[in-house]
Length: 387
Image 1: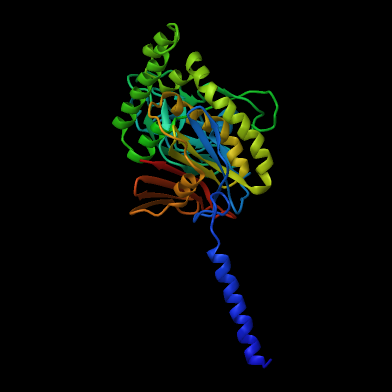
Image 2 (image 1 turned 135 degrees about the horizontal axis):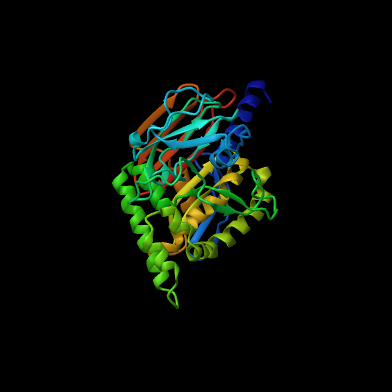
């Protein structure tokens, strides 16, 4: 065979092979979506379904401090806006100016030597009102006081219960920093607001909308209580408080949430141990057959840290959901996760620290937090909500 003819034949064979590979049918769960993530078989319990998500690559995230870790150690301080005079870190005790507190502003100081990761939806309790973090962000190590944009989730109270904010008193199983270790020790942490409340803070960014959703969910919990076989003492407790955190920590409410959350958490913890090498990094969430949310992290380590309160957040949504539908499919979950293109994109950035991107698409909003710290340059957290 002549050299030129041989080369031409080889080229045809290569092209044909490429076409063959491209034309193979793609089965749900077999290949990554356009985003590079892959959805696996779902875990279902009652009306809640979670689809594990694996990524082609995992990043080193051990440097990041979570809000729960920082509040427990005392290295992170959250206080009312105006309670810190001046911007001097670790100086003498700051003068207090309670009269300048504002509903939608808090001050945070990170005294840790690690950068702090804040997730939208995390709730801090105390001060004059409980607040929910409105946007993902990174606070650098040993920072001066940072002005946080927050939303109140306790309509009706404007009386200080404490000088500083802390965890809600919620407890999770597992060891500190390793909730999948299998140890029985419980740790305290902040609550993660359920998706419908997170959506009002992250998407609508409107205090009145957040208050309206908090009141709505309080009423939904009362309806759930009233549907029981016998009246519960907790009904009066729910009616007597305006605090979203206290409602979610009510004994009977926690029991109902646990009925859904515990089996999902147990199954997922078992599964994620098997998926470490495959870089399990997040979940797509469906309630009553409708996909509503996705949370994806840069590493399995970060997912493990947030998983206990995330699953309770999803379960809280399932407890009060009234809509009925079929079962969400893997194909639907993959399509939801893969579509991140939108009509409008908004970017906020703190040079050298982070870049926050919000994408408004057809029937959804997506949010990504990219770390710009040295040796990073990757998305630490991606959240997507259905509208």
